[in-house]
Image (cartoon, rainbow, N blue to C red; front, top):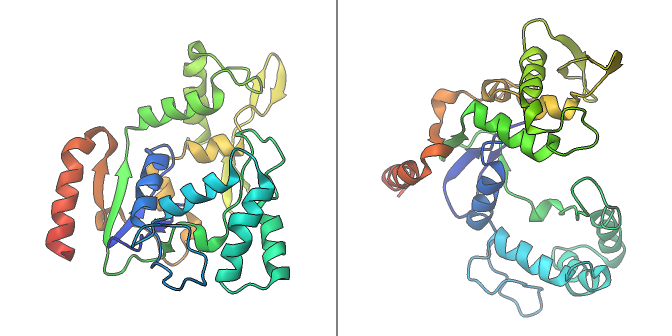
Length: 260
């Protein structure tokens, strides 16, 4: 679902689309988002800046984690932070355990810490009084990016070499085509899924995750989960990932002229 990210320090409402430089855009937004500085010496304040950005807060969190030191992370960062935002010791302990739920489990993309909501990017439904922006990318480049990230060299995939890229493209084409079968995902929303026959046996090589990551941008904007607030491309300032050098300065000019 393409949430609108509405950073505190800039009047932007940005729709982030998967495989369209999404991680880079989120890191950029983290430098524009944050909270006011805590002025009291009695309150935990890990940032040195006057306008703490999420990027700074995440960096201080990473330093406290110190390459896997969970005890240090809890003692010097998480517990003081939770007390500062009003949790008592029991609540702080419970939330800390939830944050560290995956810290000791090596998943597909490594160990992870789940950020509490108040340290996540700021989202909004409508982006009222903000400049709506969407970053887009060549559909082919998006497919190449996802194949490189999730299929190339992956032992769980039969077609995991660059020579197999054409098969992957066929998967995508047929899965999103008119004849693809409709199913429901865990949330009860329509999600098409492709069954493929490998070496004479039925296999499900192209999964729900692959399906979501290869959706067209137009499908994301029409996602049923948007409910009563669908996103119309005509309401966005479109920035092409392939032309950032020219279009980011243009975006800044529009932002200054309309919201300066």
